[in-house]
Amino acid sequence: VSFDDATQLDALVISHDHLRAFWEDPVVMTRIAALHALNDIWARGATPTAALAALTLPRMSDALQTRMLQEIMETARQVFETNGAEIIGGHTSVGAELTIGFTVVGRDAAVPFNGGRPDDLLVLTKPLGSGIVMAAEMQRDVPGHHVAGALEAMQQSQAGASQILAKSATAMTDVTGYGLAGHLLGMAEACGSGALIELGKVPLWPGALDCAQRGHRSSLFAASHARLAHLPAEGAAALLFDPQTAGGLLAAIPEGKAAEVLTALEDSGYEPAVIGRLTQERGVRLA
Image (tube, rainbow, N blue to C red; front, side, top):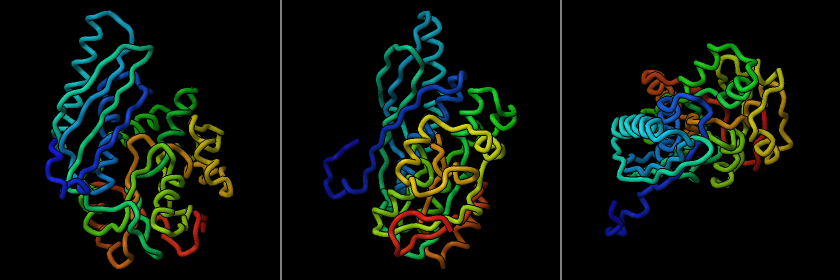
């Protein structure tokens, strides 16, 4: 990656994300971690070009470490090459548990974080609930098919959604660790606006609401809700603060372009939803 041409510097996006393994299969975890890292690039409407891997392998025999490293790197290579990027290096260490992270470089960023305007519609490309479902799974309190669905959802690439949204979005972010409400708050504040969420229109993964109603919460839930403590945190509202791993994209779209965008997303295999709009009044509110 060259920084010689200063006129192109503003178009570059560089981001790092890593995950502690929450699933025993290193291939599944690698796919999820790679897509999780790529989301920050796609949230800018940029094209991934290069990646560095940062791995912590669990303590085990040399033969098992070698096998795991090969599985991880081959899977990562496939994910990044599929999305036009190349793994150009990285670092591996040994520790108590498996962690997988990537620094990703993208170019030709097309969507700002702060360009949204009041009355722009808020389009979400993936339902919520992966954090709560996996928290319930740790307690063995959720049917296996809901866990399988959440794992499959986390492995859905947002590359196509990014390309579609970048043509119309005035602002965009991904929905990850702060939950939908937290990431929306950050985007709205950057735009100098507020946001109104229509809770009944927010899509949820199967099983997520049942898990929330039984009291399951991710370990990051309390910190996420503390930023928006005026909002309710029970029932479906709890999902607004659920941290998402490899979550969807959240974009502000001018109302006149929304129908075309939604159709294109649906035709590409996504499950988009208009969940509210940006507002003149500051803060995040529920309709």
